[in-house]
Length: 340
Image (cartoon, rainbow, N blue to C red; front, side):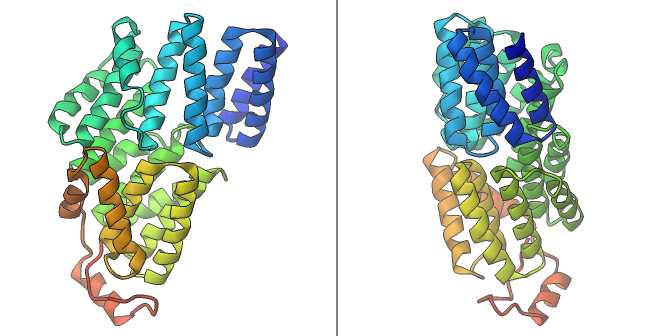
């Protein structure tokens, strides 16, 4: 009883954004659960601890997810098997490991509960969409959003809508992507990712009002590394849209360092793409950023992502461009190109 109460209390702390306290409590509970041989408590603790780890580094997050999967398989805990697969597929997408968990999803889907079947299909759909199969991917996500099992869970509904918003980004439907991402701002575990997606949609649209709204939301995040990265990204996008190239460059270098440390490789590539498009050759790192983004997506069979973004992402209006060229930034090299 004390163990279960401790797990519940630490999870409540996690949901209240008291992340460090939550991690301390859950790690202690995990040691006790393993020592007692309490399989259910051990699996529950690992699952909840993922909520703390994913804010710091995706590599240990994925390692713990695999551990959770292996234990659940060994003891025939099918619900926890399916939870581990869905969580692993979600995290591995942001980690850039798009082929991980595909086999496990295929093997488990025939016996999976309805909620998890739709989760698995949405994870395959987001990969399909990035690889050029948007038309085929959208009905899969829309079917999930019509499922009673998905709609019965606020978390599942929000995360499924996030996947749809990410597909809208690929279509260049920036406003829809922004509004879809906004739904996750109030969900503790989804807030950093959904605010980051909204920032990306706003800068692609050249929408300063929405960008400032998302930046304000990011200011309310806790101090864990991925939240720090989201705030850094917001600052870079504001600098890009304001033509403040020195600030953009400094912020870009810092944000890249943070994202590399957290292993959010897909988020990093999208950020590099946006900065490469917005800054072009105004600082040397921007040109390299675009090349790095192109390499990331091409290596995963998503060759068209960068070209599509460049063709659709907004450019600044002539008034702003004129204003910026009249007040050049001393740290820039070229000042007469439009920016998104």
